[in-house]
Amino acid sequence: MLTLQDVRYTYQTKNQVVEALRGVSVNFETGQFYAIVGPSGSGKTTLLSLLAGLDVPKTGEICWMGKSIKSMDLDRFRYDHVAVIYQNYNLFSHLTALENTAYPLYLQGVPKKEAEARAIERLKQVEITEEKYRRLPIHLSGGEQQRVAVARAFVTEKELVLADEPTGSLDSENSLRIVELLSNLAHKENRCVIVVTHDNKIAERADQILHMEDGRFEKTGG
Image (cartoon, rainbow, N blue to C red; front, side):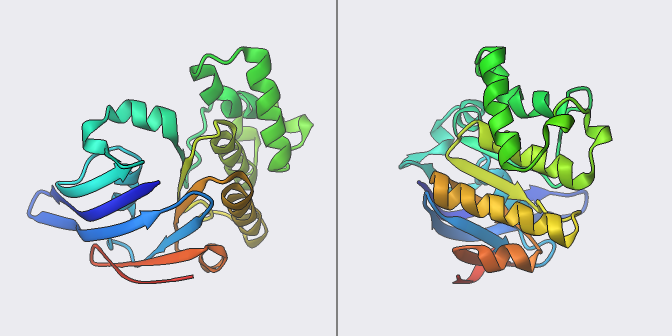
């Protein structure tokens, strides 16, 4: 599904040019759950940004279904194929849990009644109870907000799901719940799930662990 070939990426800070990625080559497949681990500053977040189509490599290629993303409309690529789960949830503060979950479907032109019915199914899947569908994010716990964010990623049925430290601010119980949801998304719904994490509980459940160090993959396991 997604192939990286000698991907390199640099950016300019005030004082220096930073080599964030230094020749990354890897294949990602559908139906698989990947964990990208490594110390802070190793290039994990930069890699996730490129996989999401937020930028293109300085050199090397990222190919989606055999086609370089450099030749694509990146906005369309993200809109059609990529769902992202953020550590800070990125929920709309003025929308309810139900509306936040259904929002990607609204953007796709799905009628409101159908969009909300599909969103409710996903909220049930992540164990958000009916009484909380109409609550704003401020009236949900951190774990509940993160599960709403996961439901939103589920609802679009996009093939590529990226998560940036999805359990970073959660307790052990909610962390395990998120890990189970992501694993099921890959294995039962045939998505490609790629997670950047410091959480060993996620890494242990992944089909493949990719270790980053100084902008490169050092070794793989799983």
